[in-house]
Length: 87
Image 1 (cartoon, helix red, strand yellow):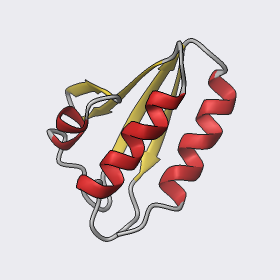
Image 2 (cartoon, one colour; image 1 turned 45 degrees about the vertical axis):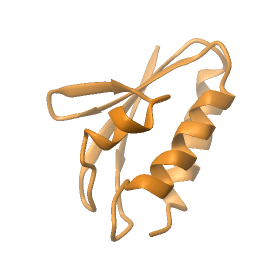
Image 3 (tube, one colour; image 1 turned 90 degrees about the vertical axis):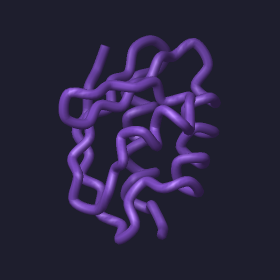
């Protein structure tokens, strides 16, 4: 299991459109469990509704927990996703 911390830098945070893109990316990692954590709340990364319940906005730090699969490769793709997150 690995864990990375990401600071959300885009102006509008993780709203519906980028949240949906994140769910598609997470679902592409077969055999891997990905969870997002903000504060004391942790949710699965394959559910848009659960991701939206985190109310991630600009400047928030989230932890992403990855277990199974090629964790290092998945970490890189998730870091790239958040680095290129658009409004």
